[in-house]
Amino acid sequence: MLTGIHFLVTYQCTGECDHCFLHCGPTRNGAFTLDQIQRVLEEARRLATVSEVYFEGGEPFLFYGILVEGVRRARALGFDVGIVTNAYWATSTDDAVHWLRPLAELGVADLSVSDDEFHRRDAGDRRAAFALAAARRLDIPCDGICIERPRAEGGGPADAGKGRPITGGSVRFRGRAAEKLVSGVALRPWTTLTTCPYEDLSSPERVHVDAYGHVQLCQGLSLGNMWEVPLRDLVASYDAAMHPIAAPLVAGGPARLALQVGFQPAAGYADECHLCYSVRKALLDRFHGWLAPRGAYGLPDE
Image (cartoon, rainbow, N blue to C red; front, side, top):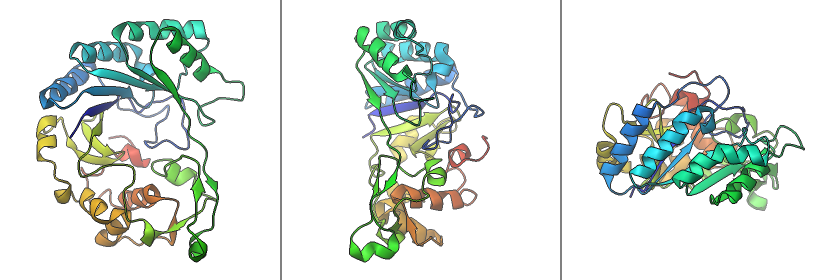
C-alpha cells in the first residue's frame, strides 16, 4: 500500500557526488513548478492511503520559495512532511535558523541532512552540523545521513568458494555510484544476485515523482507518467507481474532480469543494484517509458 510520496523537487544540485543515485549536479534540469506540486498533492490526497510526503532532490533548497510553499500546501492537506538536504545554505547556526524557521513554523516532521565525506567541501566543513544545530534549536526532528565510501572486505568471484565476498560501506551501486565507485571493491558472482533487497516492487510503500511526471519505483524504474495517466490510476492498475522490468526482478532479482532480456553480464558485480543498473541502462531504448528518466542513467535530460 502506497503511503509516501517523495518529490524530486529538482535534479539540480550544488554537488556532483560519486554516490548519487540520480546523477544529480549543477547542470541538470527538471524542477517542479507550484502547479505541478499541487497536482501531485491532490492526487496523493485522492489515493487516501498516503500520509507523508518528502521534498528532496537534487537539492530542494535551490528552489527555496517553491520548497516552502510546497511544504505549506502539503501541511494544509494534512500530510506529514520531511525534507532531505545537503545543507549548502547553512553557513552558520544563526544563518541556518533563518532558513529553517519558516519550515519549523509549518510543522516539518523531519529534516534529514547529508553529513559525510561525499558532501563536505573539506575537513573543516561544518554546514551539516550547523543545519542540525539550527533544527534542534527550532525543535524540528532531524538526523544526519552518512554514506560511507565502499571498501573491499572480501575476495572477488574467483574466491567465492572460500566464502561470500563482502563490500563494506553503505553505498548502493546504482546511478553514478555504479560507474564511479566499483573499482577495487569486492565482486559477487552475478548468478547469486537473485533478490531485490532494497525495494518492495510487489507492493511499494513509496514512490519518487519528478517534474517530468515519472513515478519511480526505484531510481530510473518507472511505474508510468502521471502527467499522462493520473497517479491514482497508475497505482490502482499497478501489477508487478505485468511490469516488464519489475516482474523478473520480483521473481528472481537482477540475475533473472539479465537472463530474461538476454543481457550478457560480467563475471561479478558489487551488489544487486550494480547488476540491475547495468542491465537497465543497456535496455533504455528497448523499454522506453519504463526506464525513466534517462538522466538517472547519466544521459541528457529529456
